[in-house]
Image (tube, rainbow, N blue to C red; front, side, top):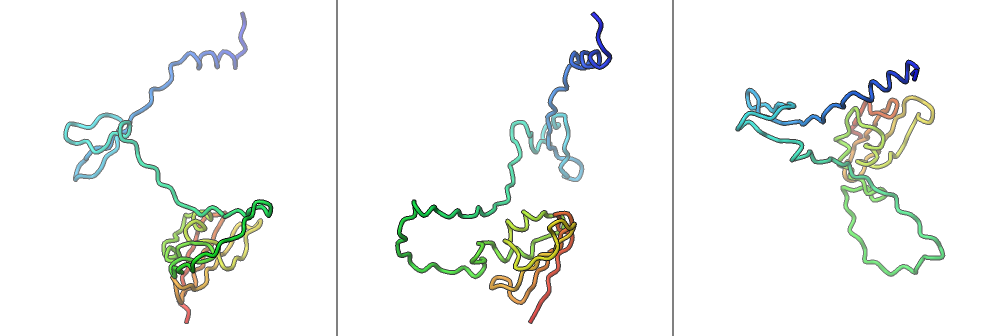
Length: 164
């Protein structure tokens, strides 16, 4: 039976044993600095075995837009007591205005929207490589205009101007 060259290479590669999954260990190194390695730590130097104690997942929360109920299923609204207004939150989006200080280069557009909501004004974007989002002063961030500049969807500059 005669094999073609690509079929012979595939047969050889398929016959080779696969690599074993590598374990990762976090140990105490010199100067009490953490060291990550693929072999078990010496006794008394263990910090974490990621096989038995996996890392926790970090999730950035975001607000899911509310859907409008269909007119057929709509029920008459009951009278609701007056809600307290949180001056640190943007009433329209529920975003934490105080988070404007923590926008940094490298974040993407969705991270910015999840943290501080949609901008008050935008320029650029829509087929252009860069865009500029501006957030006007609000109760939780008074007298400050925050401008975020994006390049290909990533924050490249954050400018905070004090206005009077």
